[in-house]
Image (cartoon, rainbow, N blue to C red; front, side, top):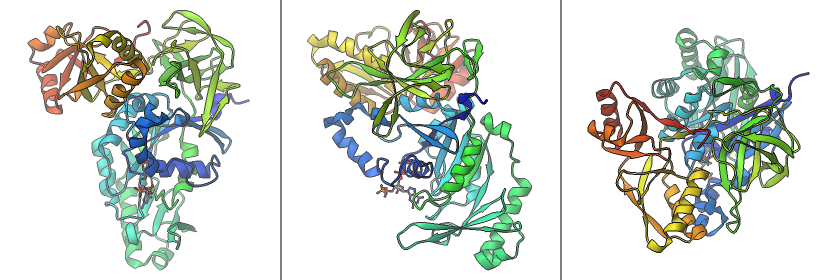
Length: 528
Ligand code: G4P
């Protein structure tokens, strides 16, 4: 009998805001049978509203707990869709969540191509070799030339593309897509309601004369030329290269009109791999291993601010989870019982009866868990799955009421444990820590939470840095400053970190100091 983990498909969707992630997610859930009506997933308008309501309502937590992972059964598989906060709540959490996924869907807007946030998220997937399937969206609107888009993906992201489908026109002239592997034309027909119908036509290959009849002479000729070019000069499909993240299959469609989504889901079912082995400090843990193991990739403050308890999200990597089981907590070096665990679907929480590799469990956390923690049975184990990522915004924390220093200390350290912020110290100015965040809005979250939960009013003096690098080869901040690094600070472990205002400064430092290695991430130590 197949191991239960082989049925698991754990994935995330990455995109730049507005490319259509929410729309595609909703359509996938609809086809997957997980929801029954369009509109069940938060619309963009409500996401917008969340910015202003957010401070007043419980939404101030940034991301709602309930949307962290959506689970559904489809096609004989158990799907776990991880939410990667993208709009206002873009943060280091977004990056960390990707470390828990086995595959990612990259959504591109056909008119815009590769945008900055897609690039960052892609980069994080690439660091782990996560396979990526690309969906080029909004073909019902005027789009860029598909060859142009493919070369942009290849040049900017450094991944080879293999189009599985190919668009026939775009915008008002969008006629559908040609499925290269099945020699199938899926025609796009607008309906009056603003939706689209899909009519499939099997053709005997790209030379089939019926194409001229159906599409018109000129579009058929264009399509032939393009497909010939792809067949002749394009990359060949290679599943192994896809699984190692070197090559991405590409699909074209229009999520809003549901065009191309169903075939995409069908193909994605075959493409998305089950959980694979994971590295844990020199050893490898296979999903089928009997011992239970999991790592914490996200810690979420409780929705109720009067309780300081939290939910720790852990990704199971091997074995079987059951409530009440005793596990070893690697960082604390002690045994503990996991009594309550929850799984989430939309607005519902359910107690977990069992979980296998690939599943995400939400553990009730009275303050025991931090990001990067490993839990396991059968001996100590530490996954090196979740690193610290370079923050992209920095601010020096100023306490407005000096009598509240104690509260501030407590609050900022708890929030750092939750992973909301990274703390740095500038030698000589340790009293005013420098905070680093990935998403700009995290500064507002911090200010608000420190005031409301810990009673200390703070503000941030924004600093002009954009990149942090952990420098292997430099022992102290003085070593960094002696080589004209613009700003040198230490992280919570006391390791020296170089800060740079822009890419140019960073590139120059890398060039001028060939004996040093500049790391974009730092491991979270097992014993911190
Ligand atoms: P996001 O989660 O990636 O930010 O994107 P989202 O799905 O919210 O989509 C952003 C906007 O793009 C929405 O329009 C959405 O309706 C539209 N959109 C998504 N997919 C397609 C598509 O295939 N074709 C076209 N033409 N539009 C698409 P909006 O008007 O900004 O918001 P809303 O009022 O529709 O919620």
